[in-house]
Length: 348
Image (cartoon, rainbow, N blue to C red; front, top):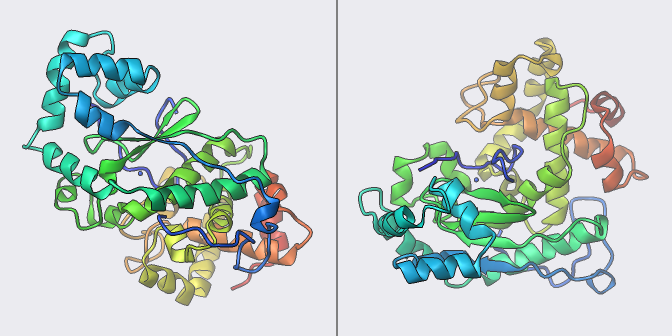
C-alpha cells in the first residue's frame, strides 16, 4: 500500500496523476480585506460543485465481489485510480482485490475500521463543505470563466492522502480530516501537521490545490524570492476567494502563530535581508522557509513553519495595495518576483 504525505495548502500538489465549512455569506460582494474584487452575487454566475460520495459507496460495496464489480461499473474512472494509486493493487487483479479490499476496510490494527465509522458519522452532513466550495468557485469562475469546474470525490485513503488529483477532478481523503485531536493521527503524522486536519479545512485545501494546478509556477528563476512570492500570491488569491475566513485560517496557522509573525515581522525581514536568503537556491534554505515544519529553522525555534510563504503573502498584499489598477489575474500572471518586491515598497 502506498503512503502519501498529508498535502499542505501551501505547497503545489505532488501526486503524479494529478493534505472551510462555514456558511456562505448572504451577499458575495467580495473581499473585506481592503479591495473589492467582486460584484453583488446576483451579477455572478453561481457555480455548484458536484461532490461524489465515493467514501460511502466504498464502505457499503467494498466487502463483496458483487459490490466491487458495482464500484467499477459506477465509478469507471475513479475506482481504477483508487485501486492502483491508493491501495497499490492493479485494477485488473480482481481476485486479489476481492481479498484485499475487505481487509483494508475492516482492519483494526491500524484503526481503519474505527476510522471509517468515524468518517461516516462526521461526514453524514456535508452542506457546510458544499456551501463553502460553491461560494469559492463562484468567485473563481468570475475571475477565470474558462477554468473547468472540477468534480470533488470524497474517499477513504487509509491515511494515504488528503488531496489527490484524479485527472481534472479532485479527490479528498476524508479520513485525513477527522479533527486535530483524532487519536489515530498520533500514529501517522506529527503534532504540527494536525492543525489543518479538520473537516472545516477541506474547502480551502481543495481550492488551493486547484489553484496550484491551474496557475503553475512559471518563473525561469527559482530563488527563494520567486518561490515564496508564488506561494504567497496563491494564498492572497485564496484569501479573496474565502472572505469569510480569517487570515490565520487561510494560512493554516493558529491565531497565536499568526500573531507571532505579525509581532516579529520587522525582525524576520531584516534577518532574511542580512543573510541574503531571498536570493538563495540551496534546498535546505528553501525547505526551511517553505515546507511544513514545527518551526522555520532559518528564523527561530519560536516561529511557526512556512514563514517564507507568510512573508510572500505580505509582499503580494502590499503590492496590490500600492497598485489599485492591477487585477488579481494580472497579479497571478506576473512572473517577475523582483518587480513585485520592489514595487510593493515592502518595508516592515
